[in-house]
Image (tube, rainbow, N blue to C red):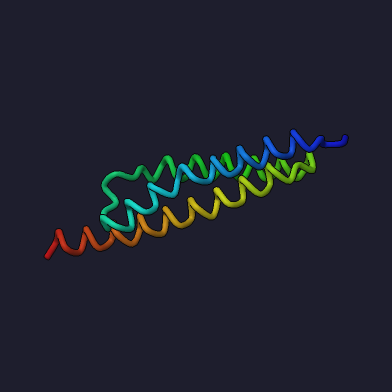
Length: 96
C-alpha cells in the first residue's frame, strides 16, 4: 500500500503534537521535584498501550505508529524515573 504525501504529513503532524503534550508534565515534575500529581498506574497503562502500538506499527509497517509510540515509551520511562526519584526523596524527608 502506498502512502500519499498528505497522509504522511498528517501522520507526522499528529506524531509531533502527541509528543508535545507530555513535555509540560515532565517539566513540572522535574521543576517541583514532587511526585504527588502523578499516577503511576496511568504511566504503566500508557506504556502497555504504546508497546501494543509499536507492535501494531511493526505488523502494519507503519513508521508513524512505530516512531510516535517508541518516543512515547521513552517519555513514560522518563516520567517513571522522575516519579521514583522524587517519591523516594519525599519518603526520606517525611520520615526524617
